Amino acid sequence: MPKSVPRYWIDSAFRVLAFVFVFSPYLWAGNWKSAIVLDKRGRVVYSYHSDIKLPPASTVKVLTAMVVIDHISIDKWVTISPRAASVEPSKCHLKPGEQYKVKDLLYAMLMASANDAAVALAEAVAGSESKFARLMNAKAKRCGARHSRFITASGLPAKRQVSTARDMAKIMRVARHYGLIIDALSKKVYSFRSRGGRVVKVINHNKLLWNKQWRWVRGKTGFTSKARQCFLGFFCRKGACYSFCFLGGRTLWDNIKELVRRVGM
Image (cartoon, rainbow, N blue to C red):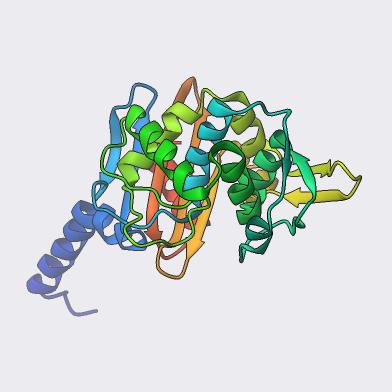
């Protein structure tokens, strides 16, 4: 006959299980520094340190796209400057003097996170990236994002450039009303031509679009060594729509899926 299990072992096991059940959300939350999910009305569904200020990386490009669409015709031709063409590292290799339509540069920026396209668009709208940043900050405030400061149109690191997961999710709630932005975040591949005829092909950085189980999750990726993995996105399921963001993630795809699961999807 096996010996009976000591009572204190049973009590200890129950304590461990209770701890995991109660605190598992916080244990998982170690995979991001900050995260939030908002429903269609802007109510918080899930939040973890969502107001701490962090670098937002390329999620900023969603805000950049809104500002561009607000201020310039998407059919206008933009001449690529030497400065825009030289921006690293994520780019679609635009060349100085080439001309592209605003619409095409927006798709390149949102899908392939092209920093050269972002700078070219900022210069086309405001003459310089620094002047464009003023428009970005004004637009962010109108979106309800009042704890952010944007310096670069691309999201590349800059001193004092910070945002919060809550602010970025508020920006996405507004961005979802821009048809071009939603279309760009939904496309897998996009090709366009310069005025001189050179063909440029871009591929969406959101790899979930190729996954049948998760392709309904749309959004903008972001990464720098300091910001780590970031994502600003939205999804609509079962008649409800949600905007979400996480910053400072250790992982990308697992974090996205976990935030979606927290909504019960």
